[in-house]
Length: 328
Image (cartoon, rainbow, N blue to C red; front, side, top):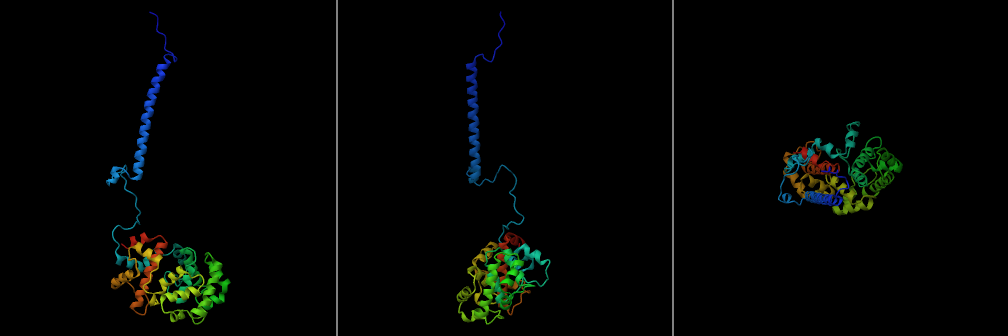
């Protein structure tokens, strides 16, 4: 019997080729089905459309709990009394003002005047409102205020600003490393002129007395100020009103829209009257010994203003959750 010939690559080419094609086709089909199912499952997971997700199934492919910030907003309702106490305390200051101010004060005299901690005349409040209504950041606005109202500039009266002129005011703003220096310097001089000639009784008048004497309502006061103070728009008038109500009782209680957003984020009533009622409700339990006022009514207005200032400051600095966490 003759020996069998070894099978070569060319043996039965058609049968081998078709078998391989069928096997490959089946494998490709299975692979495509698997890929399609995988894509569908991925899309279902991403869009939350699986039956388990709709039914509220909390099981996931990972047993790890979602990471949460240590300073995340407390889940329980805020204790309004504790929140008010914290906002009124010195402990809240660093969360409610720029870090730039905190660092700057480490190298300054203890008597350095700041927007966050000092009391001001009506004229100074108007200057502040004019500066803070400029399109600059919170940090630059407060740095400008610290610079112009402290040595060596001390531009605290209409007379001093007029004597300094555009060049002197610009020099102070240059020192503050702020923006819009030339335009702000010009507006400060125009403001000083307006107070000396129209809004007050001379360049040494810091009370803006004529505004209150000649206007019968808050709206009329706002109109007179806006007409005579260049650059003082709605935002500036709101800033002025937020702070001036401590001394000008006819403005109380007032909360501007921007500050109301911050107050609401903290969990306090989102209306001026509602916030006033909360302060009144907890008045006997609040520590208000550091407020200098002629009577309890003025002190309550000062407390109201500080709460607003701390609230909007914390919001501008992105520290609302931190304040709430500290007040628990």
